[in-house]
Length: 45
Image 1 (cartoon, helix red, strand yellow):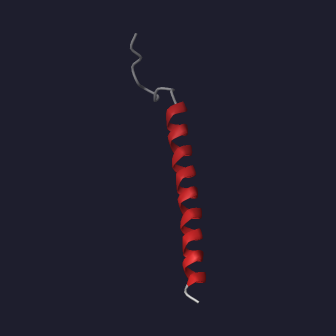
Image 2: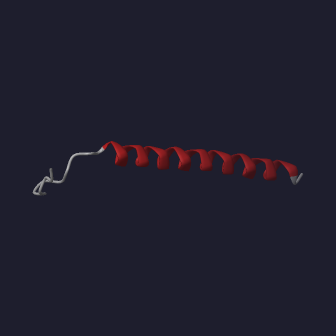
């Protein structure tokens, strides 16, 4: 009887961690690809 809820909690934890990892990876990728300087900044040579 206790095995079913434990398995469900285990699976939910795996799905949540995958979702969080993907979201974090996407945010990091978006941050790295944004190489345009902000408006009004001075460009150095």
